[in-house]
Image 1 (cartoon, helix red, strand yellow):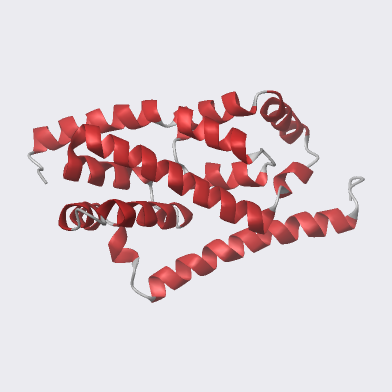
Image 2 (cartoon, helix red, strand yellow):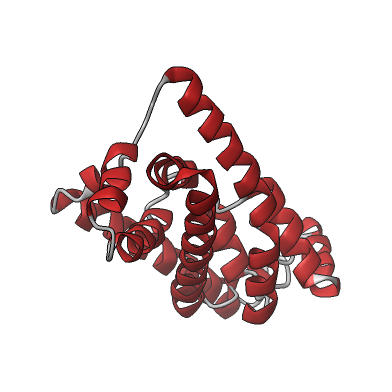
Length: 196
């Protein structure tokens, strides 16, 4: 098949299928145990407000699990801003988002390895050449554009990018969009009269 050994194709496809199967199994388990209700804006905000000591730990755990379940990151950010205000909500979101991205990377990399790296398509080769040449800068730009988008976390984990580059790029790329969203949600909450 196009000069690619069949064993490599099966290996690559098997690892990608394993990642998809894991994510589907996780989503099915959460749904079957009725845990979806914990991923609403109100539920996350309430956990931060009602559990001052452990609220942040719960927030980070929900953010990490939610990221794997494709829950949009803005829900966590809005909940943190409503519960803690724009400054502390922003800090909590940056830390929670960073941890969620790390957890997603570690789990997906463990299951899928660098399966995307084995694609022989010219577009993939060009993308990987950019990623290899400036890995931190590429991750920073991707975070500025897509923040904690679950598909980005999965793609980067499967891309073969080294974890230290992924981590530094994530830590540097998330603050600016998070700060902008914090200001937006804070102003929006004031305009519509939503308070913690």
